[in-house]
Image (tube, rainbow over all chains, first blue to last red; front, top):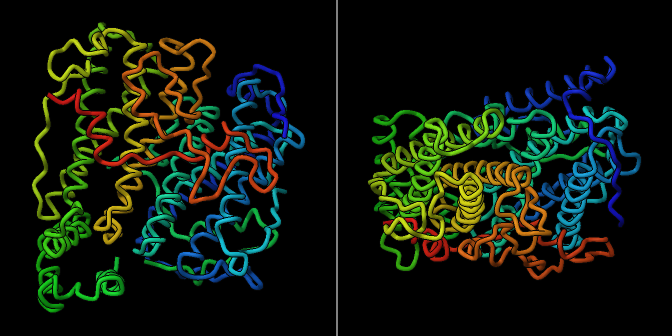
Length: 241
Length: 292
């Protein structure tokens, strides 16, 4: 797949200030969604699993395989998002920015395909159909706001899922793999945040006073993921501790 | 947190957990007694102490407190490094540009200091004793002050190079400790370790971004990205290479990532998409020259 690069050297601030009111509202909307997600995380105490799954939702399953499906679902969503960006790239992103976004796309595809091969076919969830209708792909602020939400949510999801993996030899393999992926997601998150607001790579919206990043439970993350999915997923059978 | 669930889970893999904890009753009583004495935030870590007593004599395996003390040592290193760097910037002897870059290192330094405080309290709450802060030689000269990074607090490019190496190494160090069996047995400590791990990764990405803007000590033709490409340090110094060796692998759990399922995933993409762990021994060898 060739890396698609567009030219342009607008800074983000000028891009935002020149964008239309609709775009600004969308941008603020995404920031708000992220804030709500984080507020939900802060108020959680780790064992709340009271979110009712949508009817006909795809069951992620139980045990370690369920956790792998959970990660697979999130990686499908992220990969589809970055692929969609390059179907009709927004204007105003520098060549360097678009090259790094293409890197992120390829990382997410690698993650998605890894999980696809790692999960036994009989237990693997189907290919999910994303719904990105709330994102304006022609608008840089809208795309980056969504990218930030995806990456921060991904980091919080892996951080919260580590303890749900079994204390077994295979569990150790899975936990190591989750660790290998989550730090790359955190690198993505930091970079996207810098594109939106320089200095926000690890600001207080994601790192608390103890210096800890956000951790979220599967039910909390699934609610966010389902807003971007036509085919909804359910975490109701995943481990809770 | 559900203590009973944790004990039940451990019982599945270690049927003798209650014997190790003397008896179920005394274990629960011990926990209840501790919980009454500790602030809520510290309660999860009391479990660490309970398990340490139960598993502490296992040979060849670090206890939770060993892992936390190892992490604390690395956080002392980072915290002191930024403390000295930021002070040098304020004092005018290290040219960290005002604005984004000064603010970045203030933020990162505050996080590392917070990690030190957090780990110390976690160790104490677990019934352990935090290791003392070592004396550091940030030139990596083992106390001579004339190591390969001599001038690290007067030469900004060198400061950035060492900062990047510390952050990338920290990410690898936490990743390697996550699968310690005692850490895996303690949900709350494991999650906290993961929450620090991703913060270190955010730091690493930002320091790398600043290094790209700065350009100092970056080998010709090398693009320093927020993520690690192959085993490239992006730093003109062989002294940091051990922190990057092993990052180049493209095969994960026997699954080859290059060209996976017909996708256009290059060797570069495949190496960047996964960060690799380091063992405690590898990390200690890397940081040894910094500790007097």
